[in-house]
Each structure stands twice: as structure tokens, then as C-alpha cells.
Length: 390
Image 1 (spheres, rainbow, N blue to C red):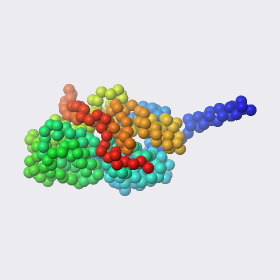
Image 2: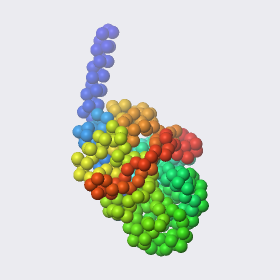
Image 3: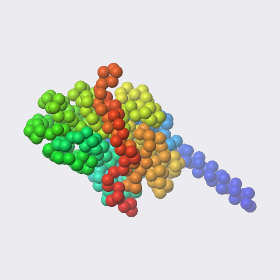
Image 4: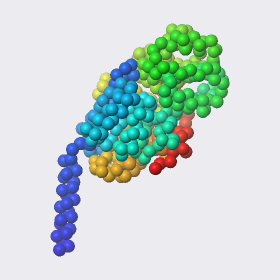
């Protein structure tokens, strides 16, 4: 009898393994920005994510996956609609991809309440890092303030004492300036919030010039940053008032569009194309081979996002009914990040090193970023103490 029971148990285990291997791919819904002048941000996140899947021949963590992608057009309501369709029609249990924090705030709190996991490859609003944290919400990129905090510390260390601040009027813009001021702590010559998606900065530049600051800190991602940097240089301000900002305004595609006008600018980032980490060297080479262009930090975040999800899928053998085990595996962050050392804090936001980079011309005359120094080691965001996981 015992032999029969053992035999039946072994048979059931074999059947379970066979069913798992032949199961439908795990569906992952990606809501991201693919249109507007900021569309390349979502494109890079998507391409970094897809590269990780391609490198595993259609799998993540050895588990077959299907990536569903749709464009939110940078509109919160559209992001909500896509999320609901992915959940109700496609039965997706994992969502990712959102670029902008206003879209994230419209989507994330609602989906996690429905038991869906959301893993952010970009937007990290302060509310979701603090009181609005949730066990099913993870951010594999940063908390919004972080890359501005490191610049605030650097500017303070360099002796600047009267800085003009500029950012779009939406959650990430407010977080960016709050992060900068948290570590800069000097005089603010002006604090201006522009319209999200704005392209003409003539009025802001006139006000900035009149304020006579000794430096400018700005956060304008995507096409906004391209326009601002070009107009700043054309106004003759670059030669007299140095510019600083987070990496979002100095990614590789912005630099290609702006050219020499960005050379010499210092920016803060958790990642750089020249970061000498084994996983990063593999990623950069593979991305260039696959897409014929240098990856941005957005692409690196999309790639790490996929690798994190893969590590958790591997832990549960693709069985998304094992929610607690999947969540625990995400929290463990058992994957080789392109940034090297990486872990999650109690609010599921990264604890990581953060650097300042300088925009330079390389040996081929291309405008790119090079790491100047590491300013923060194992840096955690300021909102983690307010997080109480339910």
C-alpha cells in the first residue's frame, strides 16, 4: 500500500510538472507612453524589457511570457482604461511600464486593490513610497526625489548658494524639486512650475535671467528637456549660469538631439552606460546589437524590470496563484541588476548607489554621459519611514 501511495504521489508530481511546462504563457501588461514628444521614453522601457525576454527565447526566469503593450498617450484616464482592459479581458496579473507619475497615481492604487501586482520601471511618486505603499507595488527604478537629491548634495558641495529651480507642474516635478532642496538647503532664486508637455520656455528664461542665480536646476524629461536645453544655449545663458539636473533630462537620446549645448552639464543618475558592472556590460552590448542605438537609463530600467519579474516567476514556477510566494520573491530581488548592488527597502523602493555624471564628447565625437563620482552609497528614499504595509 505504501508503495502504491508513493507511486501515485510521484505520478501527480510528474503531471503537475508537465502541466506547468505546457501551461499558457504568463501575461504581462505594459502600459507606457509611446506617443507625444515623450514617446521614446516608453519605447526605451519597452525595448529594454523585450530584450530581456528575447535573451531567454521568449521566457523570463525560464517561464514563458506574453507581453501586451499599449500606449497611454501620457493621459491618466487612458492609462486607467488600458489597465482595466488588461485585467478584465486579458486576465493579466502583472502590470508594468508607466512613465509619468500622474498616470501612475491614476492606475496603481486601483489595480493593487484588485490583487494585481504592479512593478514600476520608472515613475516613483512620493505618495506610493510613503503612506500609499502597498505589498503588491514595487519600483525597480528609484523614488522620484532620488536623482534630484544627489544633485542637490553635489551642488551644495561645490559651493553654489543661489539656485533657480524649474520643473513641470505634476507629481514628479514637485518631487524632483523637493528632493533637490532636501540636500541643497541653500537660497532659492526662483521656483517655477511649467506646463507638462510645454515646448516654449522664452518667458521662463527671461525671468530666470532677471533673477541672476549662480546655477540652475531643472527637471524636464523627454522632448521638454530637448527644447529647454536648446533654448537655454541659444539665449546665451549656458556660458554664464551652469545647469544641473537629474538624468531624465540628459538621457542618451536627448543628448543626441541637443548636441554640444549639453556638454559640460552635471546630472544625477543611478545608472550610466559606462558603469563597469558585469550585468551592465552584457546589457549594453546586447541592446546596441539588437537596436543599433545606445541604451538610455529608461532602457536599463525596463531590462531590470523584466529581470526582477523573471526572478519571481522562477520562484513560483510561473504559478501566479502563489501570490504570497511571488511577492516574497519580488522583495528578495534575486537578480543581477545592471546597477550592481540592488535591494528593496521596506516600501519596495530601491536601496542603491547614486552617481553624478558629466555630459562629454567621446572619442568619436558623440555627446554622452560619463560617471564623475559616486555621491550616495546604499541610498534609501525619505518616505520609507511613513510606509506601513497592510
